[in-house]
Length: 92
Length: 474
Image (cartoon, rainbow over all chains, first blue to last red; front, side, top):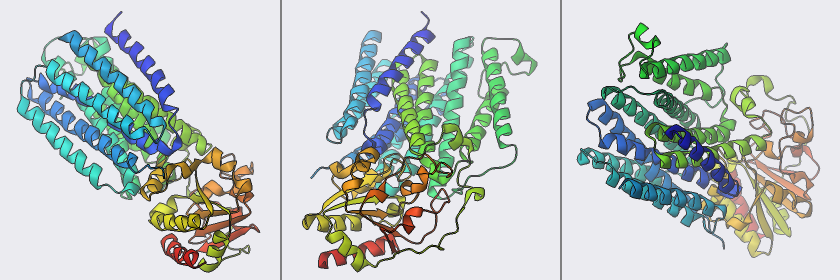
């Protein structure tokens, strides 16, 4: 089985797993869900680190570095602001 | 090392899924978010150990720069501006994915090897989705921030242009894939070089950026919850596509989770407005043609002042508050909380009914109320609160309009079929509002003229402060 096909299997199964867990998130938490998911989409940082780490040409390095900066903003900002919101959800 | 890295990525994937699962209850949500960030940390440490990093200085500097910017934004942002922030973060995520795909395109091209059809297609997809997400998110940010007009921007042949652009992107994308495998088309245009200056690649990026703009500008401000959700989904798909480019499974898994999340929220938002995604995307809802079928102000209403409203509230046994975005705009949620506390001290049962599209993104109103220290078990969603209105004495509506408009039950109305809060079933309804002007849908609201409705006109914050005083004295 080619790499592309394995990737497709993983993608479809992960989507289904995601649908299962996410559909159980109550409407009250939809904004934190979205900003948390947003932080997770910063997983592109992994790709950016891979390409930048092994970069030998200027363009690859420039694009990769820009990718690291933007993805890190996404990851760090996303998780922090989600935490800030969730700590406000209290029961009294 | 390779298999150890793969195991570490697997652990990261499990932490992501179980972290999201913990978001299913407000009690465990915070630890769920912590777990998801741990998952990210595991993945990042793994890639740093697994990749031979040639230039640590650049990598570390880039991470620190991003972390500082992200951290400052996250700490300083106002909760009312949350939708804008999510839009911006979405844009960065999309742009990062596109940048990685572009870097990989240049890297493979520079190595002198052929790209392979699969690689070519995935690079095109990743660049396309990432760039669309980036420019679309920036426009969404502009609309939410008020930099770009909130009303739909339409022009003749808009759909035709979008379609042409889309076809153009397919042609250009196919040409890039063709150039990648050393095919026959690319040499005709002198576009065989697989580098950043490849005219097809440049055309792809430009066309994708333009498409992102064109897809978002015709959508009105009131439909932003749908747009933000959809862009959220795109940013995940862009990351997943990048995973295909690099053959990295954790990108595919995490990207797919985000893609699914955004899609579910998009569907929920469309359902809450009883509109299809196509209608949101191309309907240009809220344009001039649909405004005010009925002239306002010609029918009598019963208006009350703060003292009378306070009496009605204070001597009720149960009160349901229906907050709309107007509450947040007026920054009156803290005053509202004071009113509710005073009522509860008197033994009144107080609950909140939150419509799914109250606010500018899904669940936005709940965050604003949580910020004002409202206990989350008092925040009821549409179905739960609708079952309660029959037995509710007083409904207090603050800054909401279309979501409580009984016209939704009229098959001929423009909002026909939209799920609404059945506030008219309560014994008394108090509507706190500036004027009788229509909401986003541009139609009059029969609720205001009903016998059991009391209109409490004025600025939400001023009137709420008055109400605090009067309830205290009641």
